[in-house]
Every structure is written in structure tokens, then in C-alpha cells.
Length: 266
Image (cartoon, rainbow, N blue to C red; front, side):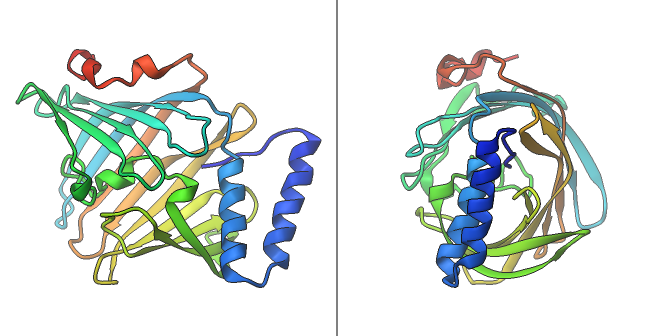
């Protein structure tokens, strides 16, 4: 999720990016140009924390809720990914569960899950990235940071997305063991925010759709969606993530994202 800079530099670079996207006739070059602008607009946020609610809904419409918090640390090196930490506060059966993720580009992400019932930290296998994250419709690879260089890009078309106009891109994972053969991603033309993603499974069938809504802008630069809704078309199940109380530049560092601290989190 990306946002603009307030300087003339931004205006010039934005015009350059839009011009490049509009001028290129090569679908791959145009797709990459759009994704690069999405990535560029979110650079420099440093770190963030937020409260989070997860609402699980089965195919009969029955729901259950979980309360969490999430911390994110930006890694400025473009050859590596960001770090994130998710901690479950409620209900009691998942209280204390924590997921630590180090995103990488083409190498498998490093992910560790702490399960308080077992009192041990479990490393998530690189072959299990498509598995569900604590029973939700989000896979482990969905929770990890979505880095620019993880995908091959191809521009497909322009089309309306809600009350906006969007670029539609096809994104193909370049890393191994993804549960997806491809994604279709809608980027709004005004701010280059991801508005919707269609995920296609290993058979090429539509598996899930993720929609981003209720965007807020922070620090006059960074856009964050406060509601993410994932719908599994093959099971009828849904998971909604509701963010609140975003804060940026809290002074987090690598010491806040170490696996040996997972057991002591509160």
C-alpha cells in the first residue's frame, strides 16, 4: 500500500511513471512500471503498529472473532523484504499465538509460529506457504510482505473499480512453493493503491478474492486500508481483517522481531 510524497520530486516522478505506463505498449514493461510506482509510494514509512480484528465466517454465515496486534519493520534494502509480527490477544484458545515473518525476494520467506498450547516455536516449512493462517482464509504467504521483486508483471487492461478507474495487472509469483499460479490485481490510477486481488490456484481456477476498503492516509504520504476482506470462492468461507489505531515511526528495530522473544510477548 503506497502513498505520495509532498515535494516537487513526487510530482515529477509521478508524471514520469504515469507517462511511462501510458506510453509503453509492451504489457510487461507497462505492468512493471505500474507496480514500481505502487512500491515507490510506500518507501520510507520506517515502521508501524496497529490493532487488528480478524472475523472468520463459515459458509453458513456463522462468525467468530479474534483480537490481535501487528508490528511491521521496513527493510530499506530493495534486495530483501520487510519484517512483521502478529500477536493474538483474544479469544483464550488462541491467546499468545504469534507469527513472525521475514519476507525475502526469491528465497523462501522465514516464518515462525509460536503456539502457547505446545509452548514451542514452530518454523513454517517453505513447502507449506499455501496453508491457512490459524484457520483463516489468508495463507501464510498472504500474511508475509508483498515485495515488488517477488512477481512477474503484465498489464491486462483498464477498467472501473468501484467509483474509480483502475489498472488491472497479472502477477505471477517467481518464488517457489506458492499456492497460486497467478494473481489479477486492480491498482487505482489516482494513488496506485491495490484495490482488489483475484488469486488462482495451482489448477488455474479462481480460488479467492481479496478486497481493500476504508483507506486512510498517514503522515501525508502513506495509505492504509482499514478493512481487508478475503472470500474463498471454492469453500464459501470469508475472513475480514479490520485495522485500527495505526501508528508510524515508533522506533522499532531488529530486536523487536526476534524469534526468541515470541514466547515472552504480551
